[in-house]
Amino acid sequence: MNRQVTIFYLGVLISSIILIMVPAGYAQSSESYRARPFADLSGVDSFAGNDKVPFRFPLDNVSSDTSPSYTEFCSRSIWTESKHMYHAAEDYLRPAGTEVYAVADGTISFSGPMRGYGWLIIIDHPQANLYSLYGHLSPSRQRKKSGLVKKGDLIGYLGDSDENGGSAKHPLVPHLHLGVRAGQRSDYSSMGEWRWQAGWVKSYPPDLGWLQPSAIITSQVIPAGGFPNPAAGFLEIWRDELVIAGIYIIGCVCMLLIAIKKDKPFVPVVFGVILFAAVFLFATKKRLVVSYAVFAVATLSLTVGIYKVIRRSSKSPHRQS
Image (cartoon, rainbow, N blue to C red; front, side):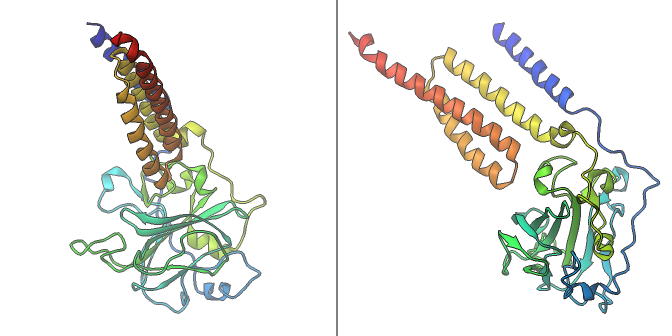
């Protein structure tokens, strides 16, 4: 009976945390929102060799290229129309192997494989309080993995249809997914609507800080102090990661209490080792809040387990006498 009561109250506690941390707060979609047509790119090639302007286009020969663009900023998803999904970037059709360049000076804050996007690169531009995102790059060709970059530096190449987020069975048309967002990548969660990598979102993209890339590049204007972050609270942006972190903490504490009560010291030791492996996994995915929480509970679990093992070992001779 006591065990059932404990489980009941644990469920109530977890549910309460979720209800508190996940209030209705996402920016709401509206039927009045429309896709934004691409800005006039007829003169953007001149930006590539002009050191007096802050931005350049990430592709060459844009002014004379007559190939069609792929998807506009804020366009509605045609395959999930009922879910009000909006495109948070601009897509540009180009052949596989096309060079992709940094749009501005900055620091690479992420470079790695991303499901659905082949190889993904994100560059923070603190001078403008922006970050730029380049998706569907090639994982098999040379690509920039870390460090500082200057405007116009080659960072990668567009991927083939079977490696750019597509596969041999479901190929994806080669194109560049270009996103620009106010703030730095670390300002956003890795999960939920506010995640730092988002191709399609339920909320209207500008409400989440996403900006129209072609308009930013062609305007060449940086507001005083940089582009302002969207008006959103800490819990609104980080709620999903905080919920996952809270569940890990609660689960670990409950496991430790049960292990201590049952006098099973090796259980928290094994559990701690497994959690340290999970820390590495979450860290590689840049889920920092979850990583810190799992690291804390892993350390607690391992410490308690080792302490209990040592204590049991020190008492074992007395039990034999």
